[in-house]
Length: 116
Image 1 (cartoon, rainbow, N blue to C red):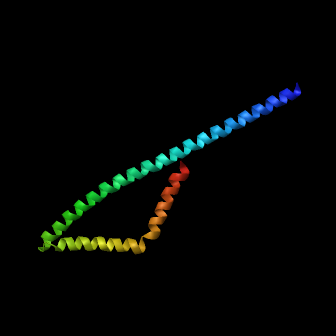
Image 2: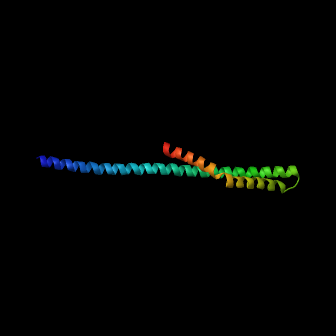
Image 3: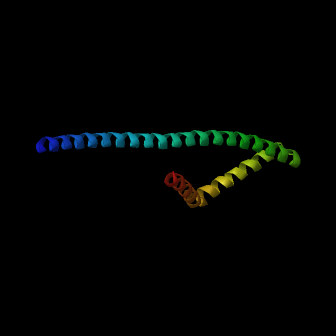
């Protein structure tokens, strides 16, 4: 009688451990899916916003280049000035922007990752 009760308790323990392991695996699978979907949605949203920002920046750059060209009187000078501005901006970011950009991204991503 006591042996049967002990055997039944061990069987229940075994069943409960298997159920716990299964539910634990399902939980982590759902948690991974949630984090992956958040990342995918953020990536798609960032890409769409970036694409539209670049389109707007291109159109505004052309408009400013035309405005400068008309003001100076030389048709191509505005384009060279706007191109030079973007070249200086590129070089400034290339040489001086790595650390600040890295710091900003690290802070933002770690806040988002560890707060959710």
